[in-house]
Image 1 (cartoon, rainbow, N blue to C red):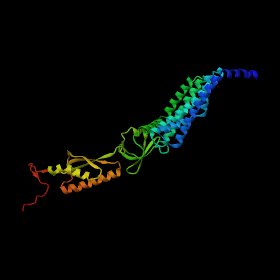
Image 2: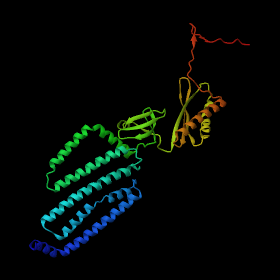
Image 3: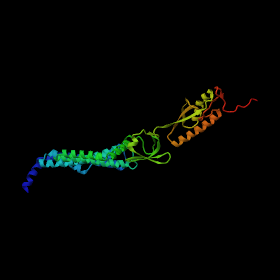
Image 4: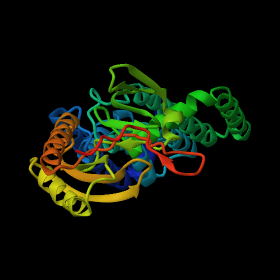
Length: 363
C-alpha cells in the first residue's frame, strides 16, 4: 500500500502549487457559471413564457449542467497539474463528452429561442404551436446527432461511414416526406415572414376571409359568407395574397353611369357633389371622381374615396351611406342614372325614317 501511494504523494508534492492554482481557477470558473445559471433561472422565473432576447439568454444560461461544470473544472486542474497521460486522456474524454452534450443543449435552446423571439408570440398563443413542436424535435435530433458525431470522433471512432449513412438516411427521409417538409417550410415561411396573422382579413383569388388558424399543413379562414375555407400553406403562398388588415386606411371604388341627355354643365358639377357627399362621412376623403368613358348607353364615372381605419363593417356602412347620399343629391340636381338601353330606327323603302311610335297631332 505504501509503495502504491508513494508515487501519488510524490506527484502531489511536486505539483502542489500548480494544483492549488488550477483549483482556484476551476473554482472561480464554476462559481461564475453558477452565478450565470442563477441569473438565467431568475429571468425565466420572472416570465416563463417570455420570447424577448432577455428571455432567450435566460433560458440558455439556465440550462447549464452541473456535469459540464465538473468536467470543465477537472480539465482546468489537469491542465495546470500535468498528470499521467492516462489520467489526462480520461479527463479530456470526459470533458469532450460533457462539452458536446452541453453545447447541444445550448444550441437547441438558442435556436428555439430565436424562433420564438422572431415569431413574437407567447407559446400558448402561437398560431403555429404544432409546427413549433415539430421544430423542437427536429432541432433536438440535429443538435444531439452532431454532438454524438463529435464525441465518437474524439474517442477515435471513424465517423466517415456514420456521417455518410446519416446523410443518405436524411435524403431518403426527405424524399419520402417531401410533402410534409414542404408544408412545414411553408408554415415556417408564414411564421418568419408574417404575410398575415390570425385575425387578419385576407383576399386571394376570389376568396376573402378572416384567418382563424394557421396550422402545420393548412390555413383556415372564415369567409364573408360564413363558410370555412381550408387552404394548403404551400398553395396559399403561391398566390397573390392581399392582407386587408395591413395599413391604416382602405380605398373603395364606386362606378356609376349617367344618361347621355345630361347637360355638360351638370356633368361638371358631379366631382363637387361627390366631394361634398364623401367628406360628409367622418373619416372619409375623396381621392377622385372623374368621367372615365363614353359607354354604350351611359357616361361612365369612377369615384374613389379613402376611409381611415380597418374595420370592414364601418367601411361598408360608410359606403352605403355615400351611395344613398349620392342618390338623393343626384335626384335633387336632376342627374339621371343610366341603365342599358337600345334605340331602334326604322326606315321606309325610300330611306325615310319611320317613327316607331305615334306622333301626337298638333293642337
